[in-house]
Length: 426
Image 1 (cartoon, helix red, strand yellow):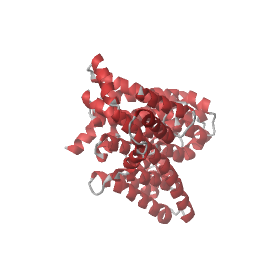
Image 2 (cartoon, one colour; image 1 turned 120 degrees about the horizontal axis):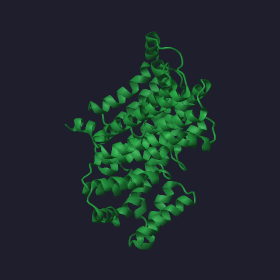
Image 3 (cartoon, rainbow, N blue to C red; image 1 turned 30 degrees about the horizontal axis):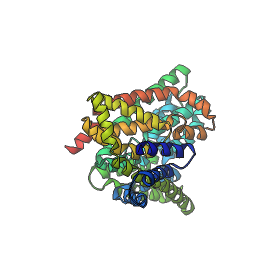
Image 4 (cartoon, rainbow, N blue to C red; image 1 turned 45 degrees about the vertical axis):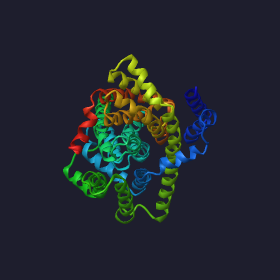
């Protein structure tokens, strides 16, 4: 009865339009008042305990780094470099969108930020060169979903904390699924471009590539510094996030000189607001997870599934369906903080690696970024391209299908997720 009230009150809060943090904390408070013989102050205690983690410092720093890179001209130069490499191919601008988004994701770990930063440059350029504007918006929205997968991933950091896994290992676990999805989207985009006759822009020139490389050198160096620092052991993921911020400020202020003190303060202000939203969700999820643990939700769910079958594939299918449904209504951060305490113990009982589960969960929540009614990237792509949302939804259907195929591959071929982390551990 208590569990039913918990989830019922949560969805009632959501339907009423309450912020997700209030829905999580409020439903936990309703449960505690009605069914738990403890003081309601436990809600605040769990919220504070959830955010009082050193590892979580990486979240605000990576958010800040993304804002600084966008303002400081780093994203613009990455787009120019990618265009010099593949822009001349048929469908070349579509490839530029995907490659630029992958680069940007590898620096910020944010799908929505990649969609906004790259889309603001590429969508008008694609439309100017004869691309269908709805296709351009749909492609940009889809390309932005790689942010939560490719390291440094904010969502993967949260998963590592909740699943008690190494942050470095989990960041590397997103590489395989991220690049698999990116490659599949590239193939689909080029096939559509061939069918519609979208030509390339300009001609390939080694001289131009070299020139763009020199201009973009400091921008391209950013992911090497961030990821190289983490995996060489020079710094932790949390320390690397601070390095990313410092590097972005130096490049934006003194090298590219596209940032001034005023724009720097605006970046910090935006980053603080985004961080506040995410950390409130993390804190409220701690109270919600405390209730789930008290009610032994994971154990009961595992017992029900095991009574049907002990096949891990049944568990994976159930997890996939749950993640896809939740992704239609809730952002990836609350899904990760809510579902990890439930699915992680179940995964261990079914013999599924927690590293594999992390790749599966983040892949599923990424697809939710482009599925209505709550797909953040879907709305961002339509907004940046100034297109009606219903037309972009029609254009994004093929991309949703191809990402679902990639999701199935990640689920049933665990090596896609676990291969690179196994090299680190060995």
